[in-house]
Length: 301
Picture 1: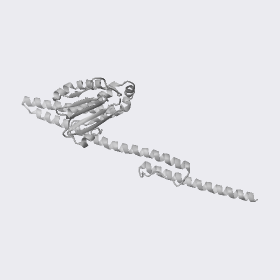
Picture 2: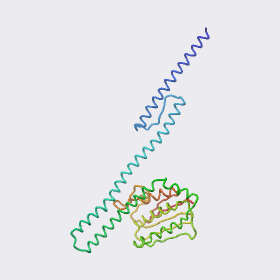
Picture 3: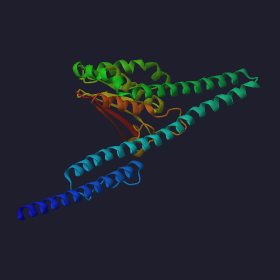
Picture 4: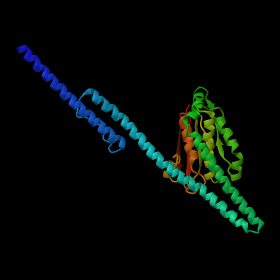
């Protein structure tokens, strides 16, 4: 009889313990559900905590905290990206509107203008503004095609097994800009190694990087451009930039940063160059010393 009573008491205690555990576990998951709802709605950023010490519930809470942390990062990136896109659209709209306004103004002036020489001047200015719009469209196209990493996946794999002679790529790129340099009265100082310099970079990407850097130099350089390539695969482009400050020089690679407000350029060239060199395992940096801007490209060897 005593054994039966003892057994009943033990069972009762076990049942009570089980009921308490179930109640605590249920409360814990109720807390978990409330925390999930608050976290998803953005009402709180405090990590999920439970009153229960059940290892399964605690493990679930830890996993949830990790996932919610990643979700928060993605949400913040989305919010920041959305803000930057809004700023970029505003700047691009301004860039487009400025030459269009000028074109319309010159067309209005030409209506009643009798002087053929002045008409010729107006036409030249209209042509200049039209070329500015063309440059803007080209930069936007290059930007839209460069932001898809998968576009360069095959090229990167090829670069890993088939290094490119970056010296030859830079030489050919500089030659392609010969007419543009001549038109602006710039005679670049070029220093290249006598021997090939092989780096791990897709040739198409390397050419685009150089094109964007040189194009920006042509827009902002007045009378000189120094280009140097070292045997270590480091390319340096230097030109006078009296209007730049150390702060603005540091922001040149920001995707949405514009050097000159109202300028025909949206400043996408450097951003594209940075994305491409990073995709190929290298890096790019800028420096400003005594009014001379230097863009330094480090290719992976």
